[in-house]
Amino acid sequence: MVGSKMAASIRERQTVALKRMLNFNVPHVKNSPGEPVWKVLIYDRFGQDIISPLLSVKELRDMGITLHLLLHSDRDPIRDVPAVYFVMPTEENIDRLCQDLRNQLYESYYLNFISAISRSKLEDIANAALAANAVTQVAKVFDQYLNFITLEEDMFVLCNQNKELVSYRAINRPDITDTEMETVMDTIVDSLFCFFVTLGAVPIIRCSRGTAAEMVAVKLDKKLRENLRDARNSLFTGDPLGTGQFSFQRPLLVLVDRNIDLATPLHHTWTYQALVHDVLDFHLNRVNLEESTGVENSPTGARPKRKNKKSYDLTPVDKFWQKHKGSPFPEVAESVQQELESYRAQEDEVKRLKSIMGLEGEDEGAISMLSDNTAKLTSAVSALMSVRD
Image 1 (cartoon, rainbow, N blue to C red):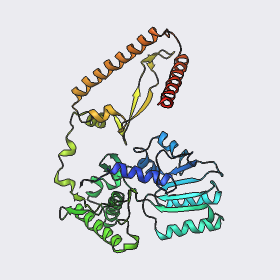
Image 2: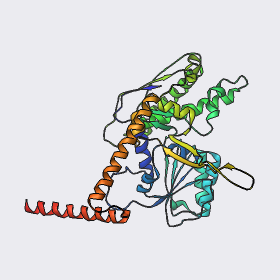
Image 3: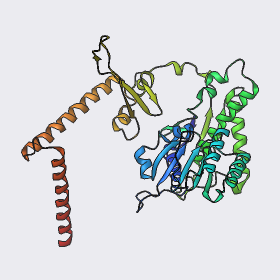
Image 4: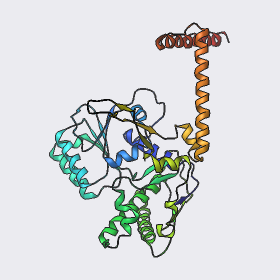
């Protein structure tokens, strides 16, 4: 649990960091003139899970991303376009990245690692670039420290891929070895360290003693101190948002072992968000629904029709979700009915206006053309009025 009052939410900070990365690690300027540089985004499953709750396909396109592909998928060469990589620095990913360099898939390579890459793996990439005569094509290499997934304005989870490896069950297995426990602790500490680097603040750490929480606290404290000791390369002396201001306010990190409160995960409330999570296929702020359209007749008898799959993103853009996700479900049902009645009233008003204007029965193209002409006429009148003034 993290307690603090920051000027910007963690969602905003991680989104800013991602946009900066997609802009070749240059601060992204909103509504900047001219077209963006068109590029390809290559990510692994970890990178995909981090990006998908924060940036929509439209937002990626606005950033100049024409294609977004998984690292280990079959990819064709696009030799006149730069590629932005966003991957974990694992052995498997490094091998595939080196293979891309040898195959000369892209014009240039902007390598962004979700967590810090080790020196030995960096040397492997350098050797592969030398062997492929692609040293000049590797434009930038960055450690992004974004190894966590933000789901709400101030709520995040440590991981989605391989989450069973750092679960409550994994830590409390009777046959867990010391090596496995160290791996679990290191994974948790790395994600928490990335969180505070993105937040731009060094936490005050409190934990329960004699538990796994204390192990995490000790390791995280050591990692923070080692980073702060090197003042020239410290990750906490810059300005993560590029606002020109650095906050010295320190958040409070409270680490609590799950054994202290085993009952809470078993509570199932009837609020809208809780029910969606419990009943539906809800994953990284996206809910997937299957709609059956009845039965169809066949020579072998009646059988259910093929189910249609639909996905809905429940993000801050969805005003109804934002307003009612914490409400009891009966209130949500009433609000749905009110929204439906409001929509029908607006639809009837549009039909009435069409009837008055003589557009009843016209296709949408004609109505769109009329709207465009109306907009042009309004613009012309406004221009005339400004000249007159």
